[in-house]
Amino acid sequence: MTESASQRLIDGMRGVRYGEVLAVFLRDTGLEAEVYGTQMLNDCPQELWETLNAEDIAKDMGAMFVKLNGPRYWMLDGLGSKVAVVEPVFKDFNGIQMRRIATIPLGADFAAGPYVARNVNRGAVFFFDAGKHIFELVDPDNQAFVLQARCVGVDSQITEESLHTLGDRLSLPAGWSYRSRVLENELVIDTSATLATVVQDEFENTYTLPY
Image (cartoon, rainbow, N blue to C red; front, side, top):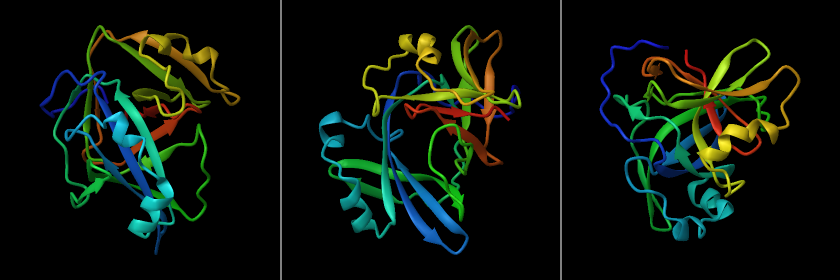
């Protein structure tokens, strides 16, 4: 979406660091992931992040398995209102305070991997400033997914500057492309009343559909 009645509440988010724990459970409707994140709580200290063990966390939470997602850095510029789509449960992971921020319905035919679109119930509003670079994955239907966060968990050398040539390193499926451009106008992605659609590349950078 390019227009929204939502008010920008927080500025200066580009480059802010965070980390997430994704716990996957088998529910009546199929597999579902609960997302716990450090957003607005702390910057996911590296020395504590390195102590996390996915198998231990899964056993403690009674989850089928756990994915350590990050650390990550926001590529958006501002945040709007956040809808409480799930009860805000707080958990401590080896000294890293996180709260449950979203759920991801994975269904019964879940297939992990990059370039697979997923729905996320996050209830958020993202703002990308005019005059700033954005980076996009474009699928075979010409849908452009906007990079919302870069990940340093797979490749610690991925910087904001290196994103300009990231396309040269991606093993893009047939019909997919990668591009960067400068926004002429502010871009607002409002998923406060709908499910977000996201996709990742093989470096676990996360992109979101603007509508």
